[in-house]
Length: 288
Image (cartoon, rainbow, N blue to C red; front, side):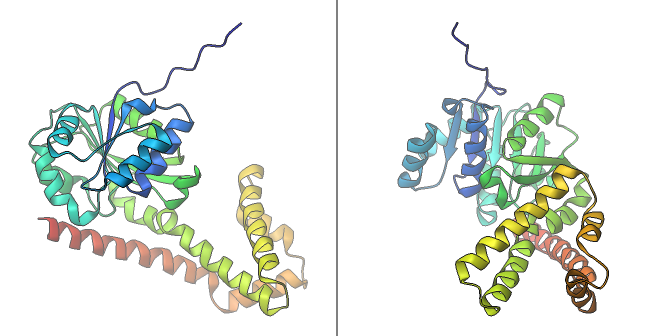
């Protein structure tokens, strides 16, 4: 007996206004998880035919940079994902606002661009979803913060969740918490990479070959994350299980405590959030 192919979760067109690495990561995730058929995805950019040809070859999507065709795609798409560079957003959104109908859903992955600014640039009270994915979305292990404007209905909410759950987990939050989320998951991978750099360097200084030190560090970080995920235990509880009194791990933790490691990480997250706010304010001023 032949098994019928699964029906995609989304059966209408989605236009990606910008064809960079984040757009590609989302498209790859949606296609791989049968969220949407590739022939329902349109990717727009300003000039690079080579980039569009590459995306067509990899995923079977439609690519376009012809000005008139781009406007037609934007005018008719039920869902538009804003993925252009921040410096290009003002011009693009002002043009976009003139062709939108009230029921089209606009999803932004542009860092620092608030719902209020998007509405202001569009000149319409459009249903808007503001998101903050992170780079791990490119391998399907992302964490995406999601904010809905009051105009987004239940169907729009489900559509946004379907899109971003295809590249990892999602967290629906109030917009005033977006900068805190940026400090944790948006920029968080960089903190982990930085610690990994230090662990690898310590291994090399201790006489391990670079490749071996790297492999051991990567597996250690991966295993620790999986332990938290699969056991459901708190990180603090798992740390205590590894830390015998007066043992070698305890000695290492004491060094980190002396360096105020715990509070330094919190301060780093807070400063990231603060800087994100500053950049958002500057972007709003620049775009207005």
